[in-house]
Length: 160
Image 1 (cartoon, rainbow, N blue to C red):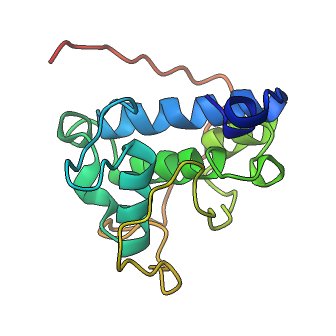
Image 2 (cartoon, rainbow, N blue to C red):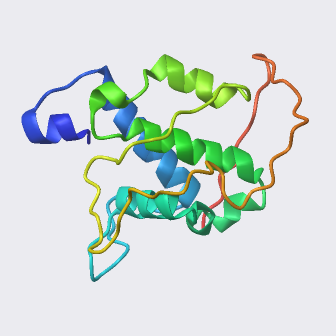
Image 3 (tube, helix red, strand yellow):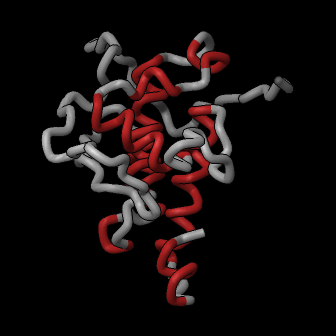
């Protein structure tokens, strides 16, 4: 649920973008947003992803069942887009049409995300010197074939 709706009852088109971002992060990490992942700090999914993003260790929380089937740079791009969608300020979140372009284009450059809404900062963590490489731990390929808007991808879901 978008923070502006949860706190003040304000609903906008950016509320759906927030929910879509949470969904992307849940899919790529294989973790639900409704579960605490650190019993000492009660860290939720958005805080966990943000912590790993700023430390440059985002690859560590990606779903291992997906990393063997999908290129790492595409999964990291999805994480990046997911973080852009869950930014605290609705004005900073992209429009859904822009998200579609970001997901389908290999040439669009993505801005650095700001801290997500509902992000719980661990004591002693300083995010000011955050990692600048958007896709740490992944080898970048320069020869990509351009995607056609007519290409179709099929995802087969398997139970855990």
